[in-house]
Amino acid sequence: AAEVRLQNMLQQCLDADDVLVIPKLQEELATSKLPLTSHSLQAAVELNRTLEALQSLQGAAAALECGTSSSSSGRGELSELSQEIQNAEARLDGFELALRKARGKVEPDVKRPFQQLLERSKQIWRRGRDDENLQEVLNAVPWKRSKRLFAGITSAACEKLQAAASAASAKCRSRMKDALNEAFAVADVAKRLRLALGGHDDIVLGEILKEAEKNGLTGLDGPRQRWDEMQSAKSAMRLELATS
Image 1: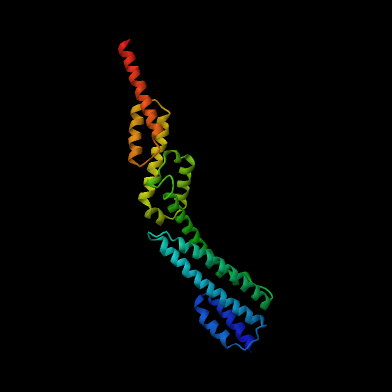
Image 2: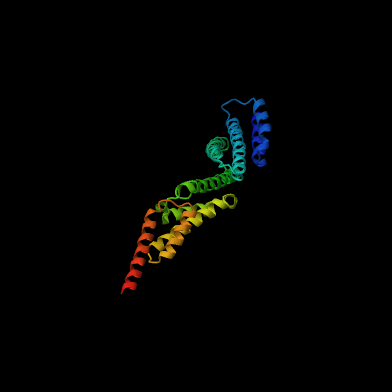
């Protein structure tokens, strides 16, 4: 009778597909007279552990979503959610093994609700990771205002910025809009400056140099020297024309 009662409770918990059944399951486990060697008891214990892990997982996922929707980076929440996902996966594997011993097989539908919850949490983690990555990119060389070395604004750096922006959530992009727009503006200035350096128009180069300085670019000694050379060449040409 005790075996049947616990098996019925186990099925009720699986049908409920909700962590709210934890108290009822724990109550049943506390009053069960089954020996520890009972496969049904072991399956119920593993289910309880799995449900507790999923409950903790839901809390960590909610904390990360709250953190990434604000100005905080959510780095601690990101690490915590990753650990909770690993723990929940391990618990689910343990429950599947125990249930297989108790029933002889495990139907796919039994694990599906748990796996769906895990996948939702993984999606939240991936979104949080991508948002964190965009913040890290914007706060590093060459996009942070104090770290805008002209030589560092390469095609690879620009591609990395674009990829980070594309992967981040709309909320994150909105929150980081000013810094992101500024970084794109810096990338555009650097691109135009390189093109101007390959040309012969000192006026265009001079204007872009001023724009680069305004945007906080450093390491501009080379471009300034090139501008001086272009000015000197123009002056020499004028002098030559005037004396010819």
